[in-house]
Image (cartoon, rainbow, N blue to C red; front, side):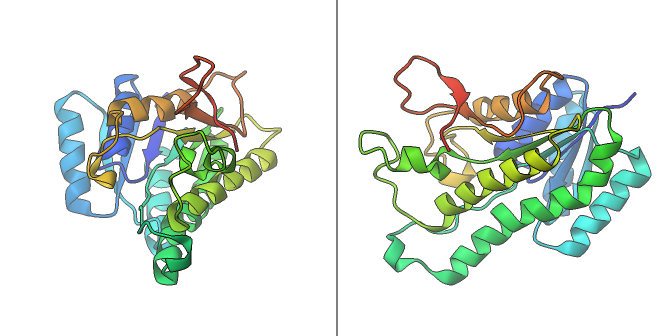
Length: 248
């Protein structure tokens, strides 16, 4: 029986490496990409490495695009085992008092509303799988506890759009986990850590491959695995545990 995984924003960066790593486990990966050309190029690279991969044109801010993608997956596979909501944008960074509301709305459209729209569209397919997994790629910058730790690495960060959107995303994750609590579906938020990608002009100290490992772990949890957690790389942890639960 084919195991299928849809990864949004999978044509590059952490999304691409997530698709690559899942494919290496024998999973059929559906590369969600807003730009068909870039999606096709990513799929070609994956197939050259032996992956079972296919492109799915998907703009998470476009209702028609989402509906078409869901219908395509339904027609071809009839179910979906893994959904990784990876697509995201950074917006702009600056003092909260200088927040541009247009940028704030744009960030939320992709990073929050897009996740809800895609998840709702794919949920009927996920329910048909034996034990589906939903992974929402979040960030430690959305952790209020870390942001308010004066001795931690997040203290210098003070911007509204991206951090607050990731805070909202962890709550979105928790709410879906509650709704699906008594089902085989597990819903978790992934914290890949500060990875060097186009997203941040390659300024991160972790690799995209390392970031993808977090999503892959949550996407392949066993039946007794957790749900409703924010889990991943723990930047600044002082207890020696590099990976674990990230504070809300």
